[in-house]
Figure 1 (cartoon, one colour):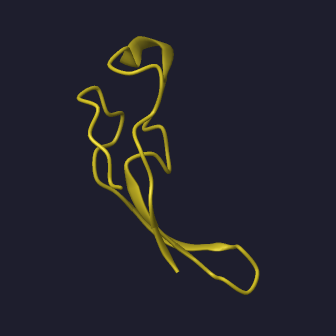
Figure 2: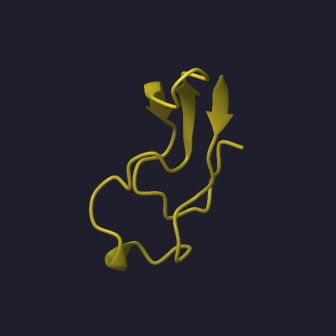
Length: 54
């Protein structure tokens, strides 16, 4: 199952969110049988432009 995720919060203020903020702004493949994340692609690491993948 593929799932799109939204932007991290608080919006725009990247100084309070260190790193890439993994699994935000992503397309994620989840195994529907056990809920395990099988794959992900982060479209905008450490998003400060409020871009979402949903």
